Length: 495
Ligand SMILES: Nc1ncnc2c1ncn2[C@@H]1O[C@H](COP(=O)(O)OP(=O)(O)O)[C@@H](O)[C@H]1O
Ligand SMILES: O=C(CO)[C@@H](O)[C@H](O)COP(=O)(O)O
Image (tube, rainbow, N blue to C red; front, side, top):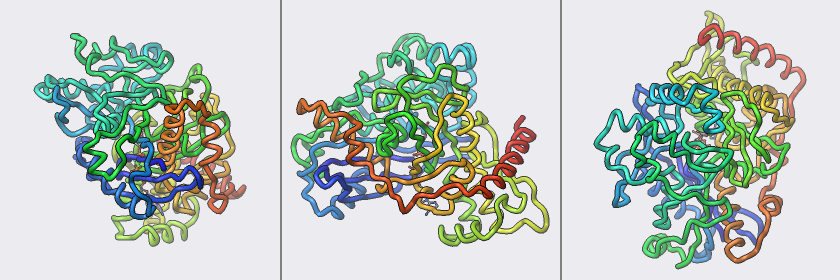
């Protein structure tokens, strides 16, 4: 049996994969708290992740009915870009700043400028620095909390931290490392000279962990933790990765022609590629994949969080919200929501706020506002799809994952707005499944079996044909018009 863990923004999900039967035997979930303030701060205590890991694991174990000692290996997926800083004793210095923290927008602008703008950043790193990447968080820490900064001995990403907690070993891997802003996505090496823009004495480069190939193991679960979790005494921990990289594995997106979209706290859209795109538009992040290739990606910061807030404003549960939104026409009666409540990464508006446009006495209804929240956030992903297409990525079908993919209305909206067929994988938690598949891959490699990741995805990734939806020609036409209105209003409000 293999354990896949996905530490997302809103919670940790766990799956237990039975390789013989080729299916998930047990699942678990535990939510995370979030520190969120009006200045854009978004932080979490790493201890909340480890507590959620344990709670979700116990649920999955109980559901599966297996003995915990049957687990051979664990794979960990994590929200990208977070900054976890440890002191010399391996203790967490302060809460982790997350991918969606925009408090560091000024530091990102300063660093981008010092790198020579978008062009300089592309030349040095193979991608354009964005607010949310780890680098600007380090500069922020140096400027705002110099005492904490002085104590840094190790800098990790969220999934690296979970691997460290599991094994006691400090390590990173190419996929998640490529979202730091101090890693060259083409050579797959850290870039110490970029870190020197934050501290010229070289100490940050010394704080970075060694980099692993995707199919390598970090180590084995620490004996005292294994006992506490009811695991056996030599459970392997695979390299793990960023949640989008492992979402790619969990949707079989490891060869050309597949596009995955995730409707989670973030909205993401990505396709794997054997080479990094040659001249990607600046918002396209040419991250490395966890399948030894690349994963050009776009990410929006305002998705299910905005939809949840609109829903809660009216006191609706998910079913009531969906009914309200479904009962009104495409276009929300002329209302547009530019949904940048938390600032935005794509388009690059880290300090923006949201706007509601087109309000009139006849259209100001809960149904129109609920629909405008779904449409506005999905148009952000359509904007991203246009950019990915500019980078040369083509596909007329999308594999849809993340919490929002459970909504049939949203799935149909994605199909109509993107003009593409949409299908979900059978396993509800694709990134956790991807992590479990990577654990199988790594375990087989340790045993000397050079099995391909492709063959494992063939075996374990099953699409749910009942979830499939196709674009409706009439709806596609109507959304085209509404999207045009969205783009126009976007340029009027944000230039
Ligand atoms: N049936 C549903 N309809 C619409 N949204 C849903 C549904 N089920 C879950 N969600 C949304 O999915 C969100 C969680 O998504 P998830 O991908 O787990 O986030 P993350 O990985 O960022 O923690 C929930 O907050 C909720 O808004
Ligand atoms: O920053 C990015 C991608 O670059 C986000 O996709 C994070 O990785 C968070 O993911 P979720 O919590 O939404 O799954």
